Image (cartoon, rainbow, N blue to C red; front, side, top):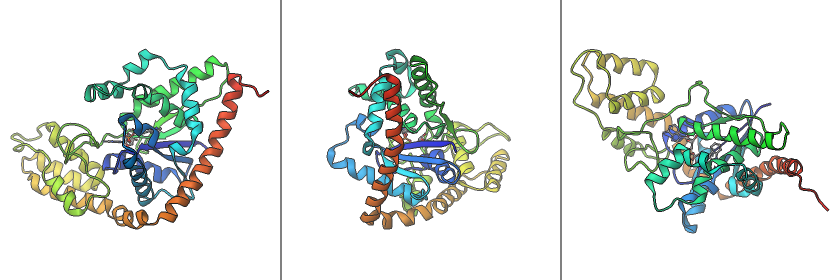
Length: 331
Ligand code: TYM
């Protein structure tokens, strides 16, 4: 059976981009593959969370994984820092990761632009840690959104380079995965780019947002004054709303508003109302479970411990073999 690995950084609440880009696939894949889904708390250290915030953020993601329907009996759910073998593999892979290629990574360049005062080595080698996450379980499929595609390419590079250096076909090639065959990029509500945590207030709809908050955010989404000619191309902020409708609503709803747009009869207020209601319906089962799970400390502890043990079993096997391949020997 093929192995699947994916993770989400523990930087707070999960949004619809995380859900449609990644989690929706996790939930389906757990029935078909040997799955490892983790909470990337080591990755979150690049932005220096305070010790007081760290655990709460990890818990938030764990709770939302479970609320969304990831089943700890089917998939291994674990916290990255509970598996120290990941950090060891990261160290080995760092020896074959080159400054030039790391500096060229789009996500690194974006982060440098956004935070010029915090260009730390962890940020530079972020894709190496990601490769370690994936290769530690020798995964071949990685459910992620479009923004992670380049990181997957780098994971293949680092794995293949290790294999070549030690002349050993050890790591398989991991590929980004989405059931629809196309990786998705969920747009934000600000009319600019993707939905994301750091894109500013109102851009992201969170799985834990109440119906009132969702309505408010969607109704404030940026629109224009409407099409002036039939079958006119949609400007990006309108296209974004249609892209959201496409993932959240039914095909009939999409077609209905698309036809109205093309006939210049669209009323954006109606479109937004429908979009908000469909988001509310889509997230309701998750939202309703979040509080109960968050209050069940004993269950969370059990899930985290069980997951850590299972993940370490697989990871320690890889590390044993990698040490052997590299040439470490016991006296
Ligand atoms: P992160 O925490 O930024 O995002 C988690 C997942 O959500 C997806 N995603 C989106 N997909 C579509 N549209 C969006 N607007 C959107 N926003 C976020 C991301 O593509 C991702 O799948 N580096 C990773 C975490 C990670 C990881 C890994 C993933 C660490 N190690 C190993 C896979 C395998 C990250 O920061 O994702």
